[in-house]
Length: 117
Image (cartoon, rainbow, N blue to C red):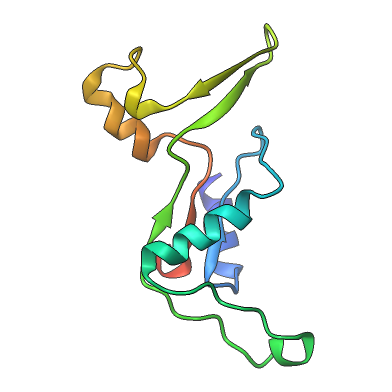
């Protein structure tokens, strides 16, 4: 899987890369929420697409290395058809020393600048 992601990142032409896990569901507005947050982190305004005549001549902006991910999310347990909510930083079932690492390292996708790859 890692090699496939690296190949995809190498072939990508945009300034922003998003990884999606194949077994997760995403809101239709997921990228519409995450990309502006990424631009906020790097201190820039979201890049506006040019019309189709100009696209082939415009290079994506060079952005500093940065990444964003969700800090909490909803889950569905297929076995018993129940919904839940996961917020690792406040989850009392996680040992306190693991909460921060789960908040930053556990998750299903990241949205990041090309330079972070």
